[in-house]
Length: 157
Image 1 (cartoon, rainbow, N blue to C red):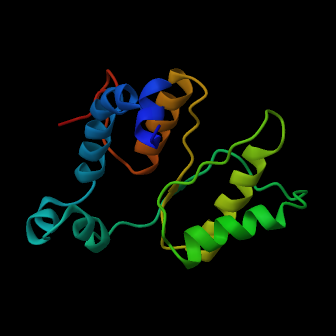
Image 2: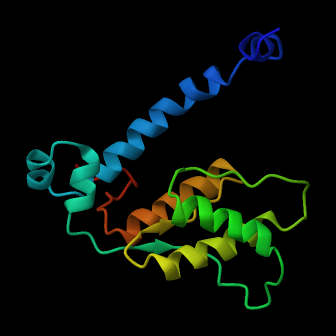
């Protein structure tokens, strides 16, 4: 049995999840484009160029302080640094493992490594423990980016 057939046999490849996330992705893209001046978007050939050329000050939203007592995990941090900062061959990285093994601390440490190594990058830590924590982080990021909000919390268009 091939890999695709095996994936179908055990429940697919996540197409339902991808379909469910499309409205969120559209909303996110709309928010990102709303902070880029329309003139910059019109002049650019792609959205990526518009984002790169926009005069936006890098913003960081990391709701946790750097753990000054973090030790170990050199190998894991080296792999993350190599993939994200040196090779720059991936945009998404998943850190997996059993509960209470330090995944969040590794991610937090790496976040601060990136912040120091790439001060021109914006960094947003978005917890997704629940829909409420996700929404709260999005509100705080919008505030940090000075995206105007109406009294009812909707985007001011």
